[in-house]
Length: 339
Image (tube, rainbow, N blue to C red; front, side):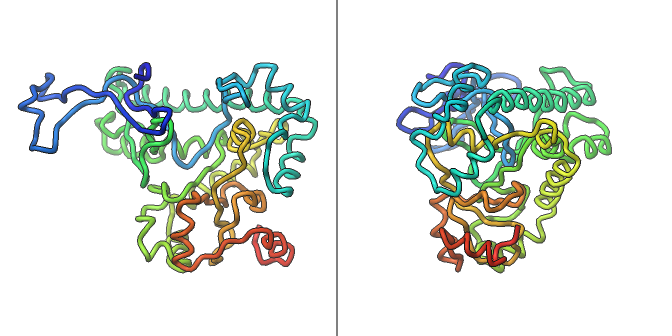
């Protein structure tokens, strides 16, 4: 049993959890009061729940060091040595164009992981400050402060963490006007607005940025998809927030100390595994193609990337989408891919 975790994943991939009998009024109920019918019972999770914010990606504090099987702080010298020696390329099977892209970003490797670690600290402090401010505004205690969660299509990741949008709950505020103002933007969105997070939109976990059922035919065909995107006000607001943060040079976009490589790129290097999600270019409205995973860098602005896991590509093909591989570079040079 994983220590202090209510939900976790076994080495073979099975997702499991720990629970106790549910509450009945103010006390723990009996088996009789918790059993609803022959296949339904009320329980309550025990220990802690990990939450992974949907739609955003902040710098990493630690990662599994290649070949070690252990998570190591990015401030440790072994990470710096990995990059300055050039050994980060060893065992990386990826498209030549992507390798060239990463090599340009990484350069001689000096300061890459320290840069990441420093910005990770600041991103963490940003979230702490946002949540602390909400706690103070609510006038609740840490024991009574409530959090609101909104889930996407999938709600549990491969680490047993809940995949959701997190926010202060409206129940924290007696005044309705104050509640609306305090909870207008989720913590996910506020991290994007602050510049301390890169966007990481992954289909089909797009609610509530896109408040639609992703597998409906009207949302999956190219024309239906783009109609949905154009009408997704929260998605557009999030993309605009990132573009504004980049234009203003704040957070990870500060030109004096920008994030050298994206968090998911560092995770690729850590795992010695290339990208595996296809990409839709949100800047190329009405397009009918997905880019192969290794070509995501052809879309320069992160808010314009919508990632699609490989297992769902067949659905897109079924509804009339094409997949671009090596020919995407030619399309780009001919101006057929917008940037």
